[in-house]
Amino acid sequence: MLPTWGTHRVILAFISALGFSRFGGESTLLPQAARQPKAEGMKKDITAYILTRLTKSASEDDIIYSVSQRTGLDWESAQALVMQVKDEHSEEIDARQIPIKSLLSSVFLILGIILIVGPILYLWVMLDVTRTFLMFMSSPSTITAETAFKIIGSRCALLGWIQLPSIIFPILIGVGIIYANLQSISGIWEALFRKWKVID
Image (cartoon, one colour):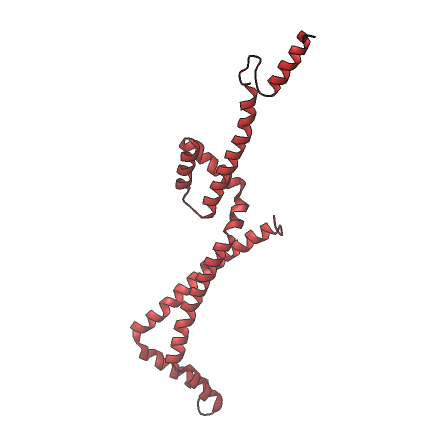
């Protein structure tokens, strides 16, 4: 029995659903459907790339240039894409930067403490504060507090006007480093609290 025209129509519809047209060519629906996952994959890849570069604190101009080269977008479109990713993933970027920021803050905090404590210990030894204090404590009737301060003051005068600034200057630098790091550490804790959803 020969197939009827209705059977032909069913077969042609089945072939068309498989991605081929009535005349044996490729259906225009298949490439469009295939393009969507590919576009989504490219979007995810470029977003992940931008996040990685932003996490490493790369220059925004360098990131925009790289995105433009990878995607074929013009400068303005690539810049808009980078800014969009930066705004939408700001908390994720901060969370990714916590380890390196914590390490750098710890290093500079230790450096600031060394710059403060080192000169103070040097002055303590040079002025022989420990022995003067012990003398005052062991015989307060012989050496009064005023006398002890006078002894230390006279020893400071012996250091001269050149040596004292060279001791005070590192202390001031250490104080500045610690102050700057306290601001950075507060930002790190804020990012941690946001990550742990302690604050909004």
